[in-house]
Amino acid sequence: MSEYILEMNQITKEFPGVKALNHVNMKIKEGEVHGLCGENGAGKSTFIKILSGVYPYGSYDGEIVIRNVVQNFQNTSDSERAGIVCIHQELALVNELSVQENIFLGNEPTKMGVIQWEELYRKTTALLEELDLKINPNDKVKNLGVGQQQLVEIAKALTKNAKILILDEPTSALTEHEVEILMNIMRKLKKNGVTCIYISHKFNEIFEICDSVSILRDGSYVGTRGIQELDRDSLIYMMVGRKLEQMFPREHHTRKELSLEVKNFSVYDEQNPSRKLVNSVNLKAYKGEILGISGLMGSGRTELVSAIFGAFPGKKEGEVWIDGAKTRIESPVDATEYGIALVSEDRKKYGLVLGMSVSENITLSSLDKVSNFILHPDEEVRYSKKYVSALNVKTASVETIVKNLSGGNQQKVVIGKWLMTDPKILILDEPTRGIDVGAKFEIYKIMNELIDAGVTVIMISSDLEEVLGISDRILVMCEGKIEGELDYKEATQEKIMYYATGGGN
Image (cartoon, rainbow, N blue to C red; front, side, top):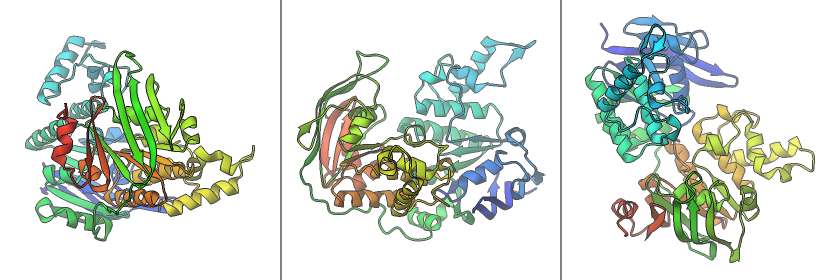
């Protein structure tokens, strides 16, 4: 009997003009947490879709072997029957159903065709307690935060008796406490003999939980290493094929004139209009600096910038001044006319039209530049090629449908869309969430170039290393207020967390 529960032999998958996987071989030991790393576009998603049956046998070359048995999955049901369960980045929950209904969807305890609700509640409660999840089984999924929904998705996967559990960027929307819950769940699974394949761009998680790591680069298998054989630099080198001399390319910036000023700004919850999500915030942003905004999830960061941009549906109060003039911004169209651009934290929901091409997405907010009552396709292509080149977007063509790009390249398309509006103020909300280290580095360089070009850059990030590494000045929010302001030279993770947890009160 082989020590490997899973072997992927000579896996090759091609799309028109692209070889997504090129003769990939990989072996994974039973009962280990196996990391899978690579830049966006390296082939990780394709690899996972083949393994989980999304791409059926016959649509790729090579073979999948589980416990010495060759598998020919035609769909995800075949894969699940073989013990493989995948938790994708895009959650597959039914918002209008309860937690318990989602967890046991299609697998409900029944008697003569009737769901046994008491048993369903009992089984759900037992599972949630085992996983240390403080969630009410009767709550509707739509009323949970994204992080809690992710944990429900994991609980759902465990009801399928997974032998191999694939987790694709599972912590992208989790709080630190929820991440620790997930890590404890994975440790329990490992003790119970479950093999986990863990895909993440967060190196601290890879080094904390993984026993070994396999690396893909440009569709090819680079190698597998035991975690003790790796450090951050060697892992980056295997992923990108070169050394990143400095993770955060800090450049000297000189603060210039005041660009944006927000005075006594409050934002109210749309569902509960008496509740303030942002409470009397005052802030200033200047040309020649990157202003970082930090804080825990729920601190009001996203609500603040989306309300400034005119995109938040709830009521708002206060004043927004741009270049010394008071403005009235009621919609994103107003904001764009004043020279404000917002790259939202959820690029797929708010930043892109996934079924449209790269070219159509880039020009979407600047149609006046490529049309005169009638769209001029040649101009659309010319502009889009300009930003594809400037941002180093990896795409076969500007006509490629944007949903077929990797996450990092989708993010660059969103940035390109807003750069085409020639913004004075660019707000980036979690600009590097879910993208690889190489793409992050390129986005940081773009931010520095924008500063040199006179654009004011405001960045929200939950990654403290990122906030410290790229910001010139940092504002820290807690419960809707700005609790602290730090120059990057004096800022530390401890100081940021002090203010983020209300230490400034």
